[in-house]
Amino acid sequence: MKTPSPDEINKIELDLLLEAVYKGYGFDFRNYSKAHILRRLTYFQNVNGLQSFSQVQDLILHNKSKMKELLGELSIKVTEMFRDPAFYLTLRKRVIPLLKTYPFPKIWIAGCSTGEEVYSMAILLREEGLLKRTQIFATDFNEKAIEKAKKGVYSIDKIKHYTVNYQKAGGKNSFSDYYRVIDNRVEIDPGLRQNVQFALHNLVSDAKFETVNMISCRNVLIYFNKELQDRVINLFTDSLINGGYLVLGMKESLLFSSKSGLYKTIDNDRKIFQKKLLGEK
Amino acid sequence: MARYKLVVIGASAGGLTAIEKLLAPLPKDFGLPIVIVQHISPDSENYMVTLLNNNLALRVKEADEKEVVKPGTVYIAPPNFHVFIEEDLSITLSVEERVNFSRPSIDVLFETAAISIGNQVVGIVLTGGNQDGAMGLKMIKDRGGLTIVQSAEEAQVAIMPSIAIKTSHPDYVLTLSQISDLLLRVAGDFNPM
Image 1 (cartoon, rainbow over the protein chains, first blue to last red):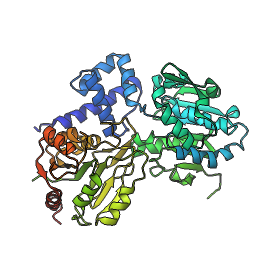
Image 2 (cartoon, rainbow over the protein chains, first blue to last red):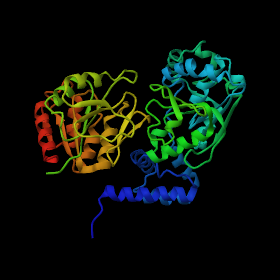
Image 3 (cartoon, chains in turn blue, green):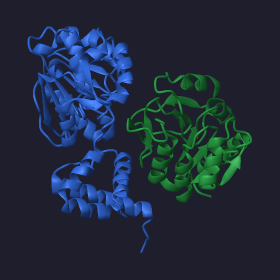
Image 4 (cartoon, rainbow over the protein chains, first blue to last red):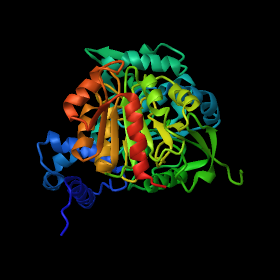
């Protein structure tokens, strides 16, 4: 009989844990990057003082609030306002003018986490005179992140950085126009979320959300394996009108999508793609 | 002797010169892929790629999402992303929190390589002024991988090598030219063709 190494045992227990999460709660992480999941769950195991993934499995199967904590650990909460300013600048110049030609554009921000990208988009739309007639859907699988996104209250430490981002992104006003300071936090202007609908949605397992003119899904696909990336791009393709825009994170692409032929590249460095019109080559 | 699949290198202050010197003797058909984390400003263009490409026989490129690493190629971590190594030697990029105040972090690269391919990885810590890489190198060592640290005397900044030596008790503490020689031997062993 062979003796499995500690790493082999760990990986077996990881697979079983992911199976338990799926069967017990319906969240499917089996097609996420293994290295990513392993790191996050090892962290979860350690902060809970557990010795193995089998113990994590036991804990989350019998304790729903611990399962919620685990979900929080597996969702990527690192985000910022106007992250990759050059992306927003290009969006403003090359995509917004075309969105303006629709009477009531709809935008889906998939994997919106704690909302920083939602408010960035809303600010940009307001400055372009488009916010009032645009409907934004902001979704994430992490309930706690969505709650935070709805509140729009953030730590003040980051405002300096966000202000620089905003200016580089072609901001037309003063960034301080969009928030007020309360103690050591900032509250984003609630008017910005007037047309934002926040909702729980899981890209891995849930069906099409809405038919929209633009989908923004940034730094989410990098955590999926190629098969899952393909599936999610299919979902996006079904959700976009012909001529609609798909924007991804700086290191993401349509390379692993069977639908890549349905898109043309608007800006490859900024990862802005457009779904072709019917019959368009 | 173990058969290796991958070389991972971590460097910080003074790293660019050291990396160039270390890799210059390696031929373009070097038998192992090399993945490098060099601490770099999040906003910078990855000028390292151009510079190293001009001066090395090896092919040098920025590490791409989901790319499977290949022998004879050097992959540089992009600014502001962690690099993970998967079991199939593909790369996952991540925007997760900084580790040791760094993104990319050397520990993250080393740790994921250690967990994914265990004793088949060669880990090298070069010059630098912080402690990144020490824990990751220990994880490689614990799994039977080959661990090498640049000698603190030679390093432009000795702190990172010193901490890595203390933390991981590496297999070798060597000068850059000695590390190059060792890499040539190790890769030859891996790829007898």
